[in-house]
View (tube, rainbow, N blue to C red):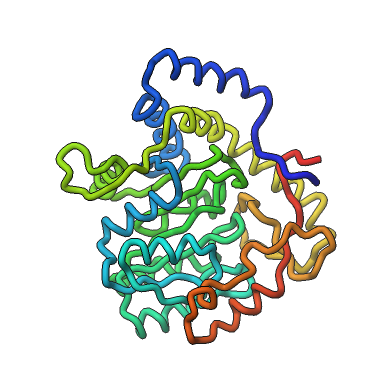
Length: 322
């Protein structure tokens, strides 16, 4: 199965019409389509949404808003380096949490230990591979009990839900990526989702140098109008893409791979990855094969993370791939 971006050819005319409108408007940034994309994404996720040029910009806006500078932020080691590096760039100190072997996501038991050990200001939970962390309800309750800001890394979780609730809505903020390989993509881009109105206001200023009173010390993380127009088209296709992937997985892959990540009842995965625990010939690789705590030279053991990095593989599952 060849990699394909989830984009329907029949949407090309609609997208080109949007781009023609942008060209004729002479407003290629901070215009109509960024607002429309934010509105559509917010409605889909039942939150407010702020568009960024990257996942990184959205993550930094959240971390700056919650003022993690010189404070500890917990992060699962089984994630992409973008997650801990965002903390470093925001001036925080990163310590790592082990994962579970069944869902590859942050371990509630180890998170509880690390909260008591490090007294963090915030903690990341990463929704791995397109599904929601199996212990997200308990993780959110623990964070609230301990007064820890909960940040959701939703870079892989487009279209994922559990009992109808979308990724990014359990914590204080969720951060999505629209990089080229994602379930829906704008090539590059990110989205911050939250119900915190003060964070929404801060994020909009942060992405635009703090204009116009400059009390927020932001930089340029604006999403341009051409990219936002792609997002407007893509979000309307998201449910269709996720439904196709789930049907394909259930019909063709589940019977072949009994040792796979198995989801709780009423959880729908966006299937950014189809994860199995047996070696396969045509694997697309690992979700993450290098634990972040080792890349950042942390001198402690996270046994489940090390096990996961060596013992999972990804079966090709691309939208209408050949």
